[in-house]
Image (cartoon, rainbow, N blue to C red; front, side, top):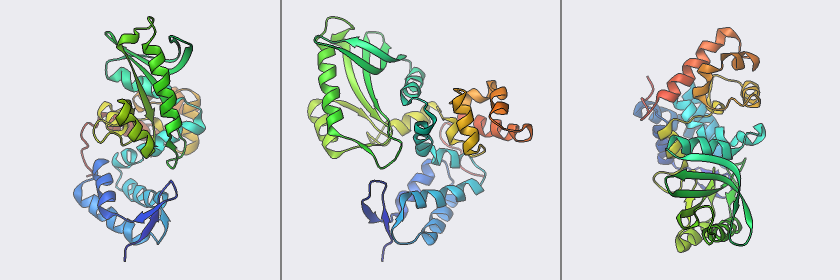
Length: 280
């Protein structure tokens, strides 16, 4: 009889060993390690365990292998930590799209035909202009709903109708760090709205783009404590690749010199990953 697990949104489903294996492989675990960790995790969890329980067991087993796979496996939760830190999701998205060749600005006021709109992120590349609504959730159980999609569609239509701001070349995008409701997906397909979620669309989703650009937040690092991460974020040190230039920030965050080389080594290895080397 299958073990029943409780998902972040409160619904239940049977534990899927293959789904866990896929997540571990995607994080860079070798096939041998992924099989070992998945089987041990399945043995440990009890009926009606939460997806957080499954994540916790798998993460701890991955971390014991001393590999960057653990940091990559924790990436979704690393973004959730932006909420308590006060670091804006919009600023992270702007940096992500800069990696993809766009000029990006945040918190812009854009004139539409009827009213002026406050836009989270504005992207420019040649004549192309993209106006992004960023919906951040600090819990994996929250989904972006239809009301937001309706609002975004109305706003982009007003901007497109304006003679200013390159309306004819403008398009809108709704981005979330979690998931969309089924109604949002249906509405977006009908209206041609561009969506970007953690695992949506199937290819080139938010997770894929972060991995491809190696834009890992310091909240993913396993060598830092929660307090140290909060202290770094308060100093506006957000991305792993910034740490090599911010040793003084590490010291101010409470990282002792004896541990600093380990933190920098993990950050450097994580940022250098392209396809996932697997665990040794």
